[in-house]
Length: 432
Image 1 (tube, helix red, strand yellow):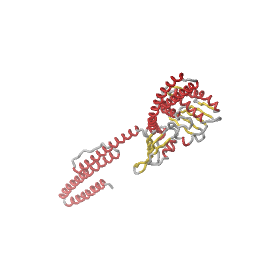
Image 2 (cartoon, rainbow, N blue to C red):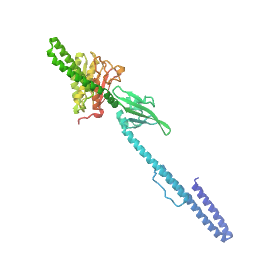
Image 3 (cartoon, rainbow, N blue to C red):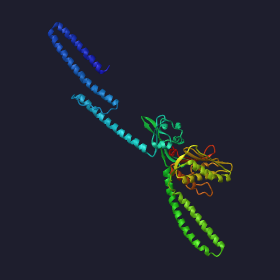
Image 4 (spheres, rainbow, N blue to C red):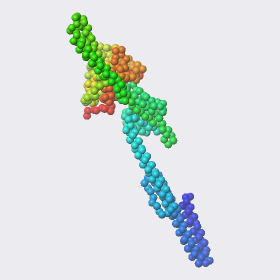
């Protein structure tokens, strides 16, 4: 039984007893009855006053509890003049002020943290106690190429994304550098934090591709430009002297040898210019085109040399126009380079297929597969598997595709077909 009910029961019982005694006194002596009635009324008044005094703090406490339960920290009480009650009010108001300040501080910190996470260049995924995704910042959504509602409340395996599956298999609490079959490089950390006494996982993914490529270009760009400058200056002066001296030579064989030397110098000069061009590819000059026309033209261009080699080149394009803003010249250049590399991997009887879909362009061949030891190094500078290769073809392809904002990869699939895939899903612009 609560205190208020017990007190009221006691007060009523006491005054019933007093009333009975007053009635008995009335039978014996009316004068005592009047006095006892006065005492009874005074006692009743004091009891009611005490009840109100006891009840008022309880009301304040009840109202305060309701306000805290409703998380309303704006309700405060004014002093009543009762010293005991006012002390309770003072303590309550002080507690409410502190709670409100803490709540405001936490809300401000949470707001700052949310904005920081959203603006972060690092992808962040947070998981609940069961390993389901509860939060993903915009960088994570862009990295995984899934809408936010397709990620939330999903297990990593349910998302069915190869990157996410690979990241979640990494050892925890240890930063790892992950390299893909394209040019993508990631620094990944899978770790845990404690929430209400239980461990939860989070995943941090920092994309290093652009940073590494820029550092790479800065490393070899200066050397190439310096070499090209020195070679060009020297060859220009040497050729000028040789061309002047050629008519003065006594016999035809000597003149022919001098012209061979001049031609060799010119080829060396061109060789150095090609290397220098790798580090100064111009930005794309975009025009809106139907990619079907570009793909079919490249297929027609590469068909005859493929037939001489005994390799069939087939082109399959979408039935609907695929409009995209690209630098046509650069796109044709890299597509010719990709098809040429595919042909070089083939022998008579093999096939090269060019497929254009709404948001993807692929070049496939069933020739020699990519060696396993080179699978993750295909776009490294100056790497070539050819005896006379310079290793700049895929570098040019890489830079042009990156300048256009495309994603891409080159790998040999389990079925033996090697595929170069270019994806521009976020850039597609269909003609109405």
